[in-house]
Amino acid sequence: QVQFVESGGGLVQPGGSLRLSCVASGTMFTLDIMGWYRQAPGKQHELVASMTSGGSTNYADFVKGRFTISRNNAKNTVYLQMNSLKPEDTAVYSCYVRTVVGPYWGQGTQVAVSP
Image 1: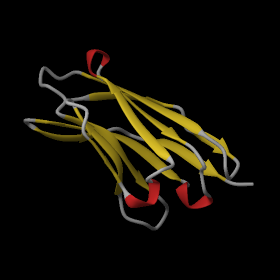
Image 2 (image 1 turned 60 degrees about the vertical axis):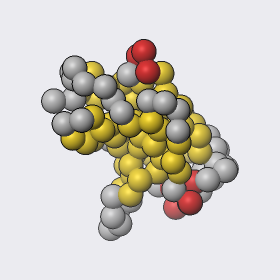
Image 3 (image 1 turned 180 degrees about the horizontal axis):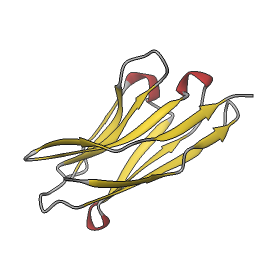
Image 4 (image 1 turned 90 degrees about the vertical axis):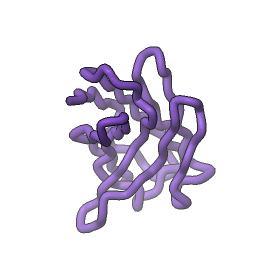
């Protein structure tokens, strides 16, 4: 079982920035992939960005050029720098990891973008 400590969410005006952080612990397996999903009210859970332990990244089209994912493998930590935020980015953002025994998601942190 993987435990998560997620932080960095909050309320921001359109055009603003937030930085999400997530520390994963409790597993002996390598965190092959770390990333972020989000779910807005009434919408499906969707991948925002992910990063392999080797540094390869994957971004959803709706965040390309605005969000940047990074990770610290030694600290089992993943970050999401979110710039140029839009109201449609409002959602609960959940940390995600994938190991050889399966995927895991955190509880999430709320991001609200509003004037």
